[in-house]
Image (cartoon, rainbow, N blue to C red; front, side, top):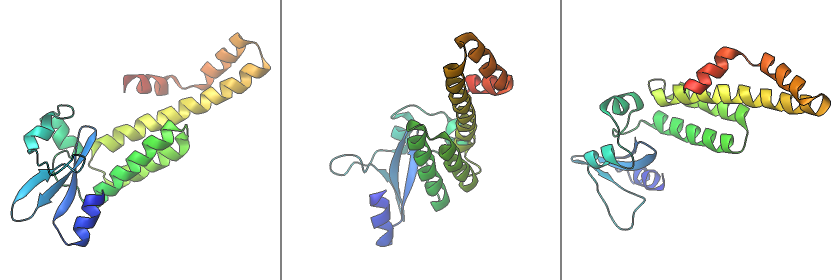
Length: 165
Protein backbone atom coordinates (compact mmCIF):
# COMPACT_ATOMS: atom_id res chain seq x y z
CA UNK A 1 0.00 0.00 0.00
CA UNK A 2 2.76 2.42 0.91
CA UNK A 3 4.54 1.94 -2.43
CA UNK A 4 1.30 2.60 -4.28
CA UNK A 5 0.41 5.66 -2.21
CA UNK A 6 3.85 7.25 -2.65
CA UNK A 7 4.00 6.31 -6.33
CA UNK A 8 0.64 7.91 -7.01
CA UNK A 9 1.73 11.09 -5.23
CA UNK A 10 4.67 11.18 -7.65
CA UNK A 11 2.21 10.57 -10.52
CA UNK A 12 3.63 7.15 -11.32
CA UNK A 13 1.26 4.65 -12.97
CA UNK A 14 1.28 2.25 -10.00
CA UNK A 15 -1.66 0.17 -8.85
CA UNK A 16 -2.32 -2.79 -6.60
CA UNK A 17 -3.07 -6.25 -7.95
CA UNK A 18 -4.01 -9.45 -6.17
CA UNK A 19 -3.50 -13.14 -6.39
CA UNK A 20 -4.73 -15.82 -4.00
CA UNK A 21 -4.02 -14.41 -0.51
CA UNK A 22 -1.39 -11.91 -1.65
CA UNK A 23 -1.23 -8.31 -2.85
CA UNK A 24 1.49 -6.96 -5.13
CA UNK A 25 2.13 -3.83 -7.21
CA UNK A 26 1.84 -3.21 -10.94
CA UNK A 27 3.41 -0.56 -13.11
CA UNK A 28 1.19 0.17 -16.10
CA UNK A 29 2.89 2.94 -18.06
CA UNK A 30 4.47 2.65 -21.51
CA UNK A 31 5.51 -0.80 -20.40
CA UNK A 32 3.77 -3.05 -17.87
CA UNK A 33 5.32 -5.17 -15.15
CA UNK A 34 4.61 -6.49 -11.68
CA UNK A 35 6.84 -5.80 -8.72
CA UNK A 36 6.98 -7.18 -5.23
CA UNK A 37 7.00 -4.67 -2.38
CA UNK A 38 7.36 -7.44 0.23
CA UNK A 39 10.88 -8.47 -0.76
CA UNK A 40 14.35 -7.11 -0.20
CA UNK A 41 15.64 -5.10 -3.11
CA UNK A 42 13.76 -4.88 -6.39
CA UNK A 43 11.96 -8.02 -7.49
CA UNK A 44 9.77 -8.04 -10.62
CA UNK A 45 8.11 -11.45 -11.02
CA UNK A 46 5.99 -12.16 -14.10
CA UNK A 47 2.20 -12.42 -14.10
CA UNK A 48 2.61 -16.17 -14.62
CA UNK A 49 4.60 -16.33 -11.38
CA UNK A 50 1.65 -14.82 -9.50
CA UNK A 51 -0.72 -17.27 -11.16
CA UNK A 52 1.15 -20.03 -9.32
CA UNK A 53 2.32 -18.27 -6.13
CA UNK A 54 1.59 -18.26 -3.25
CA UNK A 55 -1.23 -20.61 -4.31
CA UNK A 56 -2.21 -21.58 -7.85
CA UNK A 57 -5.22 -19.79 -9.35
CA UNK A 58 -7.44 -20.99 -12.17
CA UNK A 59 -8.47 -18.81 -15.12
CA UNK A 60 -12.00 -18.76 -13.60
CA UNK A 61 -10.67 -17.46 -10.28
CA UNK A 62 -8.62 -14.87 -12.13
CA UNK A 63 -11.79 -13.69 -13.87
CA UNK A 64 -14.21 -13.95 -10.93
CA UNK A 65 -11.90 -12.41 -8.32
CA UNK A 66 -10.09 -9.88 -10.54
CA UNK A 67 -6.68 -11.38 -9.81
CA UNK A 68 -3.50 -10.26 -11.62
CA UNK A 69 -5.02 -7.18 -13.28
CA UNK A 70 -4.66 -3.67 -11.81
CA UNK A 71 -7.34 -2.91 -9.25
CA UNK A 72 -9.44 0.23 -9.50
CA UNK A 73 -9.36 2.56 -6.52
CA UNK A 74 -12.84 1.33 -5.54
CA UNK A 75 -11.61 -2.27 -5.66
CA UNK A 76 -8.60 -1.33 -3.55
CA UNK A 77 -10.89 0.24 -0.97
CA UNK A 78 -13.09 -2.89 -1.09
CA UNK A 79 -9.98 -4.97 -0.41
CA UNK A 80 -9.20 -2.84 2.65
CA UNK A 81 -12.79 -3.22 3.88
CA UNK A 82 -12.47 -6.99 3.40
CA UNK A 83 -9.22 -7.06 5.37
CA UNK A 84 -10.86 -5.01 8.11
CA UNK A 85 -13.68 -7.57 8.19
CA UNK A 86 -11.12 -10.36 8.66
CA UNK A 87 -9.60 -8.52 11.65
CA UNK A 88 -13.04 -7.91 13.13
CA UNK A 89 -13.97 -11.60 12.76
CA UNK A 90 -10.69 -12.62 14.40
CA UNK A 91 -11.81 -10.50 17.36
CA UNK A 92 -15.36 -11.95 17.42
CA UNK A 93 -16.94 -8.68 16.26
CA UNK A 94 -19.10 -10.39 13.67
CA UNK A 95 -21.79 -7.73 13.28
CA UNK A 96 -19.18 -5.08 12.43
CA UNK A 97 -17.44 -7.54 10.12
CA UNK A 98 -20.67 -8.06 8.17
CA UNK A 99 -20.99 -4.27 7.79
CA UNK A 100 -17.43 -4.06 6.42
CA UNK A 101 -18.13 -6.92 4.01
CA UNK A 102 -21.34 -5.23 2.85
CA UNK A 103 -19.24 -2.15 2.08
CA UNK A 104 -16.70 -4.27 0.15
CA UNK A 105 -19.48 -5.96 -1.78
CA UNK A 106 -20.99 -2.61 -2.72
CA UNK A 107 -17.62 -1.14 -3.78
CA UNK A 108 -16.66 -4.14 -5.93
CA UNK A 109 -19.96 -5.70 -7.03
CA UNK A 110 -18.39 -7.77 -9.81
CA UNK A 111 -15.85 -9.43 -7.49
CA UNK A 112 -17.21 -12.80 -6.34
CA UNK A 113 -14.89 -12.97 -3.35
CA UNK A 114 -16.81 -10.24 -1.49
CA UNK A 115 -20.19 -11.83 -2.21
CA UNK A 116 -18.92 -15.18 -0.87
CA UNK A 117 -17.25 -13.56 2.13
CA UNK A 118 -20.39 -11.56 2.92
CA UNK A 119 -22.50 -14.75 2.97
CA UNK A 120 -19.98 -16.50 5.20
CA UNK A 121 -19.78 -13.49 7.51
CA UNK A 122 -23.56 -13.17 7.68
CA UNK A 123 -24.05 -16.82 8.65
CA UNK A 124 -21.11 -16.72 11.05
CA UNK A 125 -22.72 -13.74 12.80
CA UNK A 126 -26.04 -15.60 13.01
CA UNK A 127 -24.39 -18.71 14.43
CA UNK A 128 -22.37 -16.63 16.89
CA UNK A 129 -25.49 -14.86 18.13
CA UNK A 130 -27.25 -18.20 18.60
CA UNK A 131 -24.21 -19.57 20.43
CA UNK A 132 -24.34 -16.60 22.81
CA UNK A 133 -28.04 -17.31 23.45
CA UNK A 134 -27.15 -20.95 24.08
CA UNK A 135 -24.49 -19.94 26.59
CA UNK A 136 -27.01 -17.80 28.46
CA UNK A 137 -29.60 -20.60 28.39
CA UNK A 138 -27.12 -23.22 29.56
CA UNK A 139 -26.49 -21.19 32.72
CA UNK A 140 -30.20 -21.28 33.57
CA UNK A 141 -31.34 -24.79 32.64
CA UNK A 142 -30.10 -28.35 32.19
CA UNK A 143 -27.63 -28.82 29.33
CA UNK A 144 -29.87 -31.03 27.12
CA UNK A 145 -32.79 -28.59 27.30
CA UNK A 146 -30.55 -25.66 26.40
CA UNK A 147 -29.17 -27.51 23.36
CA UNK A 148 -32.70 -28.33 22.20
CA UNK A 149 -33.87 -24.73 22.51
CA UNK A 150 -30.77 -23.35 20.77
CA UNK A 151 -31.19 -25.83 17.92
CA UNK A 152 -34.82 -24.77 17.45
CA UNK A 153 -33.71 -21.15 17.18
CA UNK A 154 -31.25 -21.88 14.36
CA UNK A 155 -32.65 -22.02 10.85
CA UNK A 156 -31.68 -25.31 9.23
CA UNK A 157 -31.04 -23.77 5.82
CA UNK A 158 -28.66 -21.22 7.35
CA UNK A 159 -26.58 -24.00 8.89
CA UNK A 160 -26.56 -26.02 5.66
CA UNK A 161 -25.48 -23.01 3.62
CA UNK A 162 -22.71 -22.22 6.11
CA UNK A 163 -21.42 -25.81 6.12
CA UNK A 164 -21.39 -25.96 2.31
CA UNK A 165 -19.19 -22.84 2.00
